[in-house]
Length: 104
Image 1 (cartoon, rainbow, N blue to C red):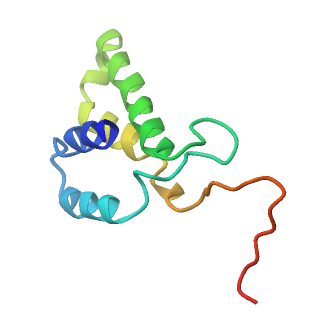
Image 2: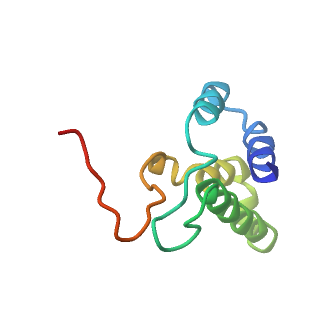
């Protein structure tokens, strides 16, 4: 899984306490298999991680054109890669016209 490897390779360069625990959490969660939405952008398996990596890549490219951003490169990694980490487990793949029965 190239997205996961690229994502983790970048996150591992962040020199902040707790990053190793965060990586363990992400790997034990559904972050790398979750979609980013139900019907909009990256609404497929692995879409959440891919979307997050795409956001980071856009911010990283801007660092070369906006000198002030290069001063906060580590924050760019954190913000870009982790901006949707709260979405873990939020979206699920569903089929149309299917009733979903919840705990009754």
